[in-house]
View 1 (cartoon, rainbow, N blue to C red):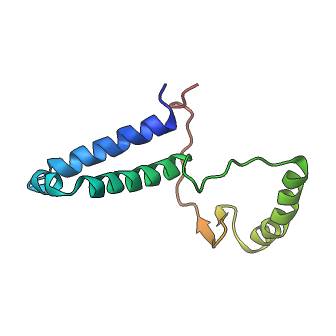
View 2: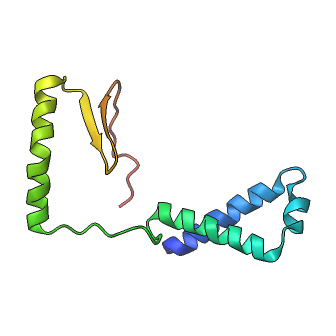
Length: 116
């Protein structure tokens, strides 16, 4: 099993291979200074690792029982508003900078492809 860092390296290698395989880009890529190529590679690795959850900005989510309770209490007013103002196929997505009110039009659930 690959680590996330190894997976990130594989992803970046495949992206570079695809990028340089396109018409004319191989010659241009080969003319880029080594230090610039290394900097680009490091940037790409940072982006992919962040997406995979190992980047410098990722933080493990560990909640104490108090925080779980606090989360539930913080959620209750929005859940009440949703129940009083929207139909059952409406969902709210919230992050640190926005909240979205979305409507489910179609849904299909299956566990057929889950890997143990």
